[in-house]
Length: 341
Image 1 (spheres, rainbow, N blue to C red):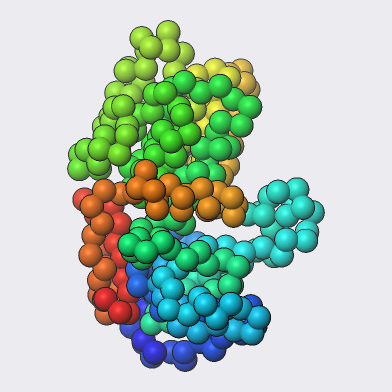
Image 2 (cartoon, rainbow, N blue to C red):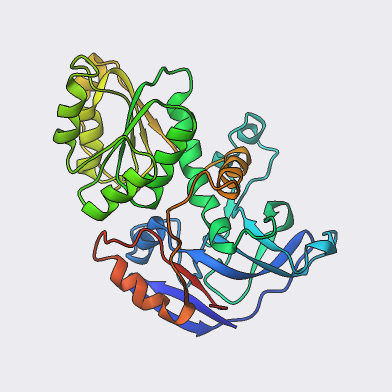
């Protein structure tokens, strides 16, 4: 079968690879829409140590079940399903404590096993969710990135009163964090994004305001927060400059920042300000099954999304698309690939 194979930094090609064989407890899926994630762009550049070439990436996907393994309901065959690519052992102390996303034995389709940038992929049967009739694969493929937003906002709200929130970045994850914040009832949610088209999209998807810089956002927060700043900042970029912006420009004393983005590994922050401001710095990794299910529910109900869904492009265009996306943000919010496009 055909697959987009990452062979090392900026080395990617469409190749023939063995078709996966179903195993007990798994299903074979023909991906009908696979989103390219920002973390995969970093992986393509060789900046993500959890990805080892040669690798078929693609963890944001939905498609048609073509075969099921032993012990799996045969009624799934022919169904369009959204795939939660993240699984845990469900027995370790972290899993028992509810931190299934942090399980030391966790596995992600597209990292520990071949992903959706192929004509077929395997997934654990308990991690596939049949989509209602009329809901297409592109919508189902958005559940994984939205689940990241759901998780980040839940961490941001836990035991913390939030009236003013700012999301830094309006790429896919930023827009998902924005919508999760709005749907979770935060009254005032704004966005910082230098790209004009992305700011416009953020406004369409529920942002009260969208600013080109952190300084502009901070100025707008002065009056409504009595000069204090935002209660919650979510950094969906993860660059050194955006982390510093979140902590040192936007956040109020006693506020919380949730770090989701992974653009840079190292960042220098002034920790006198962190200590004296009693700031809460919170990392957010992936999501739990509950987060994924909430995300899928909102998407199926039409309460969240990315606006007009772009067309699904053939796998053959994958290497060229990756090479284009590394050049920086564009008007493309999401790119979908599939072998059946």
